[in-house]
Length: 85
Length: 368
Image (cartoon, rainbow over all chains, first blue to last red; front, top):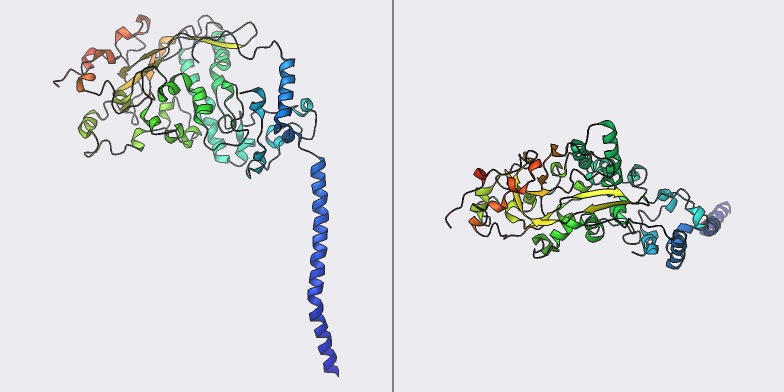
């Protein structure tokens, strides 16, 4: 009788082990997704404006036109240059 | 390039596993979270690799960033050395020459970024491939953007009647001969580019040329150490004579150069050394004249004649057959090829004494 009890508890432990491992894995996955999602949402809220603007030709054209308008009349290069450089 | 093209960044740059993973501000400064472009650009550094690349490129490319401090593309050290030798030693005049040199000659420097990311500032900049880093700088938008009027025209055959360099016809780009080690400097302070130890050497590829089994073995052996390769294999090349610099009414710098001339002059080697032992070399006229800096100071180059006005040159229009090597007498007895007193202004005869070829040294005509 005593021997059978010992056998039952061992059998039960062997059955429970994979279930317990699976539960831990799911828990770890949920925790990871929670933190990953949090950092992803942070990244999307702090947008890199350098990148979004400098990869957008339309925006760049608009801004360079603004700059050109502000600098109207200013020569970029001297008109006195003569000959080969 | 249109203004917006100069600063357009390819979104693919974000996928550059080496450079694209860094935030823009890590190299360029500024504030990437500020949506207002005007305030976001406060303290932005356009070229973070100049003058000191150690805090940007040098974080990974430590050795190159260190040696690059001595690269002639960065320091332009020979300009200073040559100009100092010709400059007026009087303190205030010399100071004005320094201002002129800094404003004009030194604006032609390069940097890590101005070869591998953008065109050099001296040719108005602009990103090369929308900020995608270029391991090998492109020839036309980088190398010949600066080395244009002489080297580009020679190498690509743009001088009327002169064919391109034979190496160009073999599709060689600049980097084939001018290796990264030469461009990046080696930590030594050279007086001129011909001293640079890892500079190009024809023998690196043509190592068999002085052996018995080479093409024209006898000609090559007979002339070895007497003539530089270019003496036999260069075509006529460009010589400039008078470059004057100044600032216009708006304070913008300008230069004015008089017309150049295509000619070919063999002279005595002014830089004879173990590396360049040949007695005869090709010479090119320097573009400066005594009044180059006259806008800044009247007698700035008072010691102009301290150095020859004809200097060692390695023209970039090499051909297997040239007018001077077609026959023996293409060169022998052909006095016009050699720099003589009649090619030099009277006031610079003394300065050029060591490069002018005395008539007795011109090889005599031979029987064909």
